[in-house]
Amino acid sequence: MKVIICGAGQVGWQIARHLSGEKNDVTIVDNDPDLVRRATDTLDVQGVAGFASYPDVLERAGASDADMVIAATHSDEVNMVTCQVAHSVFSVNRKIARLRAQSYLRAIYSDLYRRDHLPIDVVISPEREVAAAALHRLSAPSTFDTETFMNGQAQLLGISVDEECPITNTPLRQLTDLFSTLRSIVVAVRREGTLFAPDPGDQLFVGDDCYVFCHIEDVSRTLEIFGKKQKKQDRVVIVGAGNVGLEVAQTLEAGKRIRAKVVERDRARAERAAEALERTIVLNGDGLDAALLNEAGVARADAVLAVTDDDKTNMLAAVRAKAEGCPLAIALINDPTLVPLAGPLGIDAYINPRATTVSSILRHIRHGRVRQVYSIGDAEAEVIEAEVLSTSPMAGQQLRDIDFPEGVLVGAVRKGKEVVRPVGKLRIEEGDVVAIFAMADDVREVERLMQVSIDYF
Image (cartoon, rainbow, N blue to C red; front, top):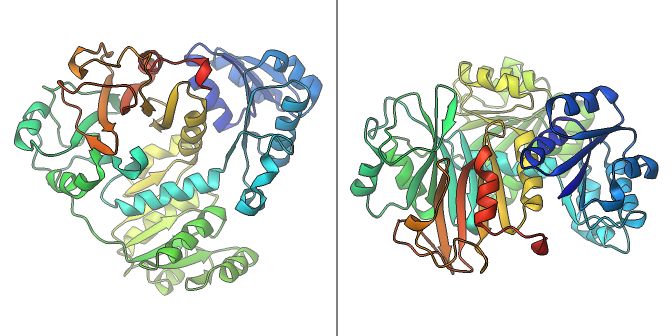
């Protein structure tokens, strides 16, 4: 597949890394020659320096025979014009645009993106994706990562193994015998910084981070088995009233169960948030100010969510909240080099906007009947949810007979409306939906097993 990626920032670079690693023909475009050079030096991609919305620049990038254009520059307007030019001048079949301004995303204006108006096939909103990720974190406070699959019927949980965990030093195959009705599978373990797909004989040790795929009805029981206590989140303090903070606050208001307070340093932004919110108290001031955090009731809060546009402010606000007695602190962290500091600083969970945006874009790039893709870590692995096609090598076979690579595990299978545990004797049929964990190097083979075809684009 020939793909043009417009924008060589963190998101564009990460998408290029994924696609070029899977032997796609990738060209990256950016008006900053240094960013283009960084991409071409570190990845197997071609680069063009120039404004992505200019027809001659797209032509140099090979738009005349491209299968897809992904517009992920920092400018919404450049992304929109790029898609228009790709469609009108070069007849590119598929166009994805990242749009951040909320005005462009309102449902009443959705007709704007029809092919006879502004031809964008998929609109990605980083703020909405990140807000959704923040709400997922709040819904499972004892996990460091979480994502839903199978139309909300299954969930991926990132669980840290500590001294309270009763199932350490136990081979994973024995857990299946001990909890025979539990619809949960440990699909990945991170030990001493290395992520891997475990074998049935592997054990969990204190200090491991593991990813568990489980049925939504078994989430509470799974967390209990790992020694985690579930606590309701009734009071939340949000630091930052930008697009992400405001989206989270509005969603919490709509739920009517959680009481939230918002702290925003910028007065104009705080006033806008106060106008947009009905029952949420908005405080104007610095989220690092201990007196202001006390006024917001951080010591009595169940969680603090720091989602300003500055990583260091988010991390320090989370640390300050923990010092004031808040049991759960979640920080938005853009810079991946800062993520290893979250644990030592006592930050319970972090949200990586780049990973959520990349996952969202990959969901629309993957061939076959792919329904969802979730990127784990620094693009180390993916969880792919996809429908089994009649031409798939998996169709008609029992799971035990399918030749999966070593770094691949099936987390769950949905047959009709029922999500079932993936046991060896389970037969995979056409129309089944499977959720598969795959290390980055094995994603291509998983796509082959799903019978990838350009026809399903």
